Length: 447
Image (cartoon, rainbow, N blue to C red; front, top):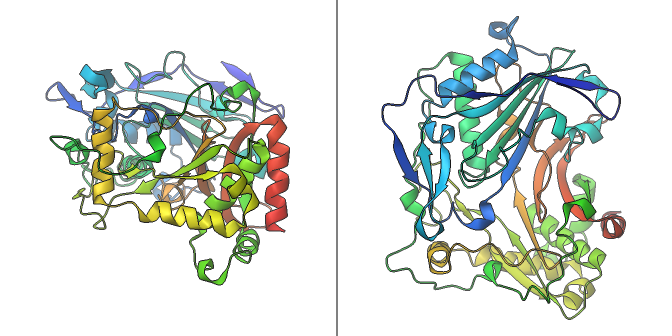
């Protein structure tokens, strides 16, 4: 199948194929996901994209990146065999993986353009060519009974290539996807017999207690009256999808608007406060409404005594929410929103994390607060290591999330092609009527 892109470029794809583990599974297992993994708010696919130049290492010269990556994928699936299975739903909405070795979807493709012909707007998220560079195989987009990974490798006429990747979020978070991709990298480079970091399932580490006890306040799961909730941002056909670039100049401009006691806030806190405030202003909401912002919070490491082992590739985060009246958020200086974000981060503790898992089983694994204009989620992927994935052709010129979900924006590392400036790109979806005002509000705060 040949598809023509916006600039007259075309991509020719072969038929998708199922790739299974290189070695047959010794037994047929069924593995349960954790009570953090299978919450309904994670029942969606995460698209990633990696652009690689024609810069092969001596050991890769003359080799086909499609063949190298396909073989590395099959060999990595020997250790990450749950990815080759299918999800099914048990009692009370509990998800489990039928490790049947059925395989992941892989598509080989060729494009008639080079990386030099693509500008910043074609590379940074949202990628306008994602549909051509990652074929959405019919019937593959669901959660239950569908392939858990979808991969396309597209050769470019310059000798470079594009790796596009889509994973089911219930299986793992960004760190888990990177761990799997690093295993593929090792298989591609070294013909390794096993990954240097062996995968660990052990999803019971993030299961609810027995008996479960909701001991904390979780505004991220507050249920809003759907009649009262504003839902203009719900229909993707009515939304504009753009991104903002925050370089050192923009970050400094925002930081200079803070009082002295907040100037040492993190870049994440600063950006989250700014985007939440500007988004709320742009949507023109009722001043008396309550709006919320959630942010993903990594719970790996020793900080929370969760005993999550190295090699664990499941979802290991919570997303606490903070609330404000619209008039207070929009009418207050930026420092007001920064304070709220800092307070939200500060309330995460081991007890808070356990309480989230308990809430899942107590309340039937609910989706987060009614989606729409009143609720927004941000996820920082700048420290996950996407840009370090090297299959033998050097590190990617861009790597990361290919765009945002309906109500979720991601912070993505980006280096501009024209001047090399490094910063953070934030894709966002808003109604067309609100996007222009949102961009104006951001510009006013960053000049």
